[in-house]
Image 1 (tube, rainbow, N blue to C red):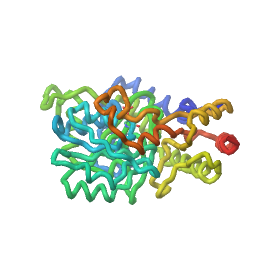
Image 2 (spheres, rainbow, N blue to C red):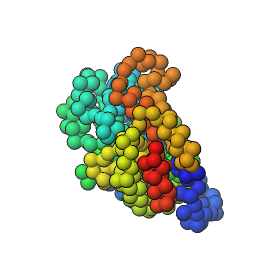
Image 3 (cartoon, helix red, strand yellow):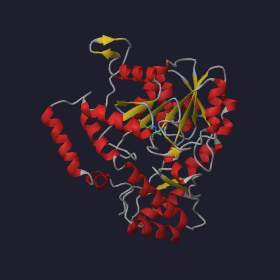
Length: 361
Ligand SMILES: *Cc1c(COP(=O)(O)O)cnc(C)c1O
């Protein structure tokens, strides 16, 4: 069976380095808010080209903390793509804000910049862009809109570590950016992890304090904070893996290029990119009319696939109030999409086998 994602293989490439670094932490006996967190945060900020980075417990918290730190709450609206992973939307509702859904572009699967302005009201506070499947959102029009209407841009970069738009990386394309280091992400740790990057010193200090019980120094609580921290072991693992992120993303691009050049089955719609550097192929999502049939066929032929995502957020039980809303493009994507195996540890042999079997479908 070709696995959708072989995480054991992904992480055991760095086994020796990881063992040594974790041993050091055990020897030292310091597990939170220490040197590893500081080092990784500095390295990741540099990598993104952002001034600041604060490690937090996971990607959802990173989004949550950004919204909280800006002080957005009940009565405020935040624009978000209708086809995102539900975390983006949950972070908005969690703060009492209203998520305003916008349809994606069927070609990029990212929010359609041309449909945003009609959704802006006096209540709109921010546009949350989601670099879905690993492709950086084409920002130029969104930058103009944010400036014109005085809105913050919040990036959900959970799927797009390292993607580049106009020479800048995700994490540096808006006012603040949330990353997830969930094990399956392009940069993933050995459990939960996340971070916020920003160039805004005030926001950075606020997120950092809120994430640590609202305290800017020990036993001095200036906000009603939460506990959301990146532990030393996860920070150490991430600091090791960050060195290999560009090479891993390059390998993903190679695999994606091979799929796109060689899968010629007319039943399969391949994903597109407007610029190779803009995409880090967290997910290689094809579309086909009878998705379940294709998934079953691939499984019968030893290829594991996944669906990102089977149900659009507005059709989820959590958002019953939206059940009558209609987002035809999102619905079409959710109905037809299927994710092929994609990871830096797939071999050429496996990639070629996948291509051959799909072409025979
Ligand atoms: C993974 C993901 C998140 C949430 O990250 P967690 O670390 O699992 O909380 C948020 N947004 C998107 C688009 C994601 O893919």
